[in-house]
Length: 282
Image 1 (cartoon, one colour):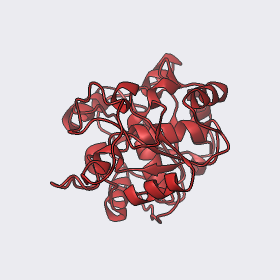
Image 2: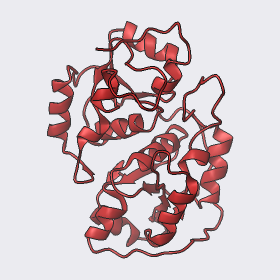
Image 3: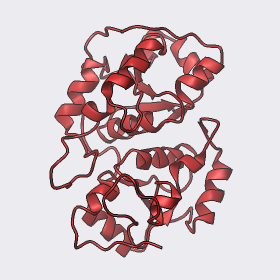
Image 4: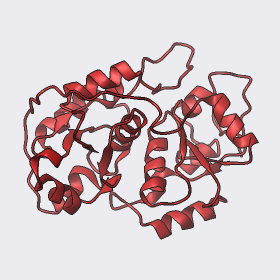
């Protein structure tokens, strides 16, 4: 299964043999909205048979007072396994995550699940693209049979702050997925320190979205090279708290641009938790 599916691709999979049909999981998420708002959006309309997974509680570990780990720390294997099983994810079926449109919540779910060895994909354009294709939606809660998925870490490359520094020291590229103004240290409204990791390049994840869906591979390559990056150099990606970073990782991997990227999940909010780490701004 490709890591990025169009509505037509997903419809075909759901129409195939039952044993091969993917489990559908809705990861509706808006920064700062809270789980009640996200769940309410799911209850209003979702793909038929889809269960709901909350990013803040299921796909993020506990936030520490000292900021270490960032605003969305990497969740433990045990926490993710419990959440995925409750959402009906089984050992022998792939899972397709989606959200409302652009894919931020779904990409975080895809990356975390993939890191833990789950065969996972994202619906390109989310619920909005599915609805615009004239495909059915449902409202209300879905009670899934508990799944039996078993997780094994290491399916993707996970970096901490030291790993990111070593990646840079080895001559590899680091891509910052936040909006460009935050990268440059302007209009920082979320984290207490403005700027970026010295040596990083600015490639905003949302610059790779057009009308809610990921742009094609040629456009990804163009944006990467315009940012000063290369397609033949290993990349590590980060953002503010590991959500847009997962989205950028999805874009690069889905469009086949460069080697599979590593993700610094703690991202900028973890980096600045240690005041001795260098900060750049311009």
